[in-house]
Image (cartoon, rainbow, N blue to C red; front, top):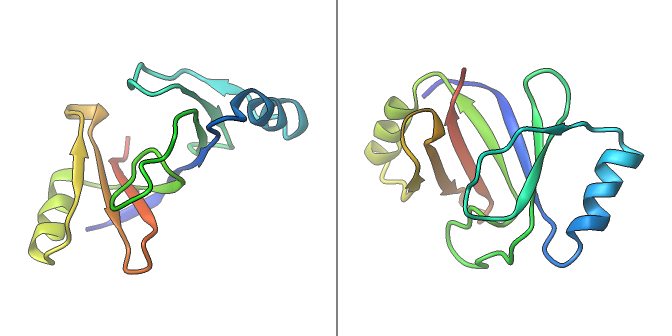
Length: 120
């Protein structure tokens, strides 16, 4: 697997989404980015060239691989190859979406959730 950059960091804002969004946009000055319908409320914010902060307005699942909880995303050069590497290493993962919208989630040994996406 070849990681190319940090793609985004996700922050769970359940119960305080509007205040948190205002903080990131008004205080930190991050502009709102386009976001597809993912079945979960939230917003995406630009955080410099090629990086974003994703605010997720939904209760975290709280156990196991949690794509709604706080996590960071690493862009990889080839998502299918990365999945093959995870499988070879015996790492459990959760995959959603297809094509350019595919997302793969794992947890590290300390329980932190990491997402992988195909780099542009």
